[in-house]
Length: 40
Image 1 (cartoon, rainbow, N blue to C red):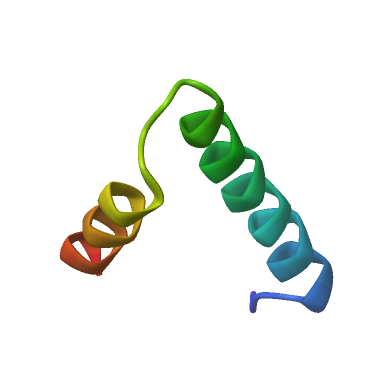
Image 2: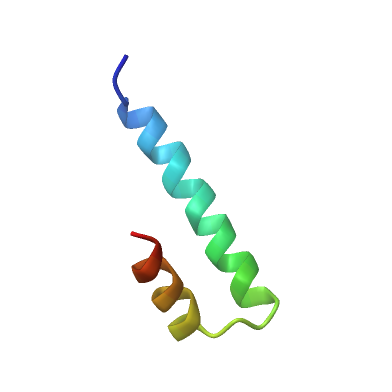
C-alpha cells in the first residue's frame, strides 16, 4: 500500500494547520522552522 496524492494533500493540510496554530499561540516562525529541521 503506497502513499497517494490525496494522502499527501491531507498531510500537508494537517501540517499547515499545526503551523498556523503554533503561530496563533505566539511561537515565532524561526522556532517552528528550527524544530522542523531538527525533527527530520
